[in-house]
Image (cartoon, rainbow, N blue to C red; front, side, top):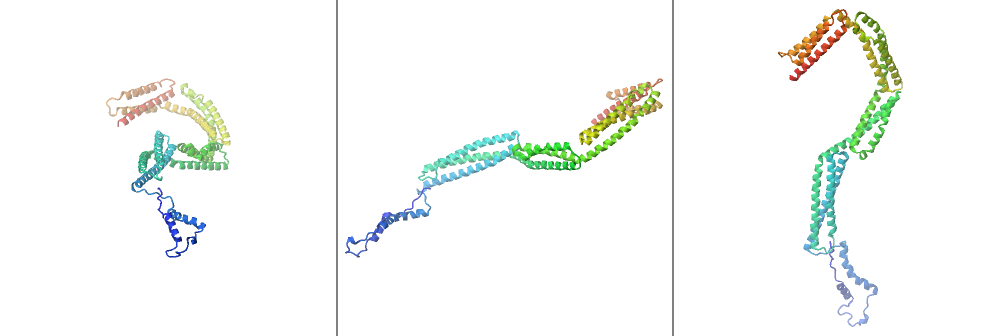
Length: 477
């Protein structure tokens, strides 16, 4: 505001007053010569001359100095309106700047969490808005710098122009602020997704750390019991770099990657802990299987010794076709048992060295060998029993097969006057095949084993027809 000087007493008026104080009063000393007047000492003359100036400066000193000149009505109104426009533009500029700062935080959060096309587009749109914000902000600053509203002798036309420029700057700021607000509202789904991811981040990292701690403690407990668990220790050590990255935080590696890493560490650490806790029981189970399979190998060896007498009986009573496929069973059984025992020895060594996967693998191989050998040894005795039964009374096998065929034929005719050719043809073939198998038994040395395999094949083919019919009925019903 221009300084408005406060009018003070005229200096010459005070000086004349002071001089009148030195003039004698009327009627006194009238006859005293002029040479008898006493002049003021020089030391007092200068202060008396400066006294009016000091008196004039006193009101200005009490007002704090720097008061504005008063030009009257319209000029000051224009200045006040321009100042109001400047204040309003400043408030709009501050609101826009604050909104931009807050939205930048949201955009940084979204881009740190989400790499989808929608998130990338949001970042690009915010950058474009930033260019517009810079433009209108520059216009506001230019308008403020162009008009000094505190200048003395501010003309009314200048104040009006300042009000117009600052008003335009305010309108531009408000318009961009409205666009920024609408853009912020459109970010709702992306912001919610980002906040959800960030809400998962800290718990996921903490769960991973706790899982690693639990795995370490479980491994220490196992080692204290005398088990080395070198494989588990190696797997746990391999997770150390992942823990380092988790500690470095999402700011360096990104939120999605950190969450994924934390989940992966959690899964692997829990697997290590579970295996460590089960390791004592696993060692005990391996010991039990070693003893069990060794006992079984000995039993199969004993049983394999009885295969040769069974083969002799088969050779004596039945044709070669009934037993020829069983001829190599004794030798194959001996070889299989020997291989199984070798695998058991390897399993024992792996157990002593605490190579648990190797021990388990060797035991599985030994078990498979013993299962195959056991079936082969049992097959010789089963063959002799079946041949004895069918040679003594073939009618049971024939009737059993015919019953299966008749049952399938009744099902094929259910609700129909003629059977479906798809079902009738295989059933007719089954009847013919059974008849041929029965006819082949005529002769001096019948092939009873061929007869048994043929009747079994007939029953399997009939069973397939029955299954097809039931599936069709089920689809219709």
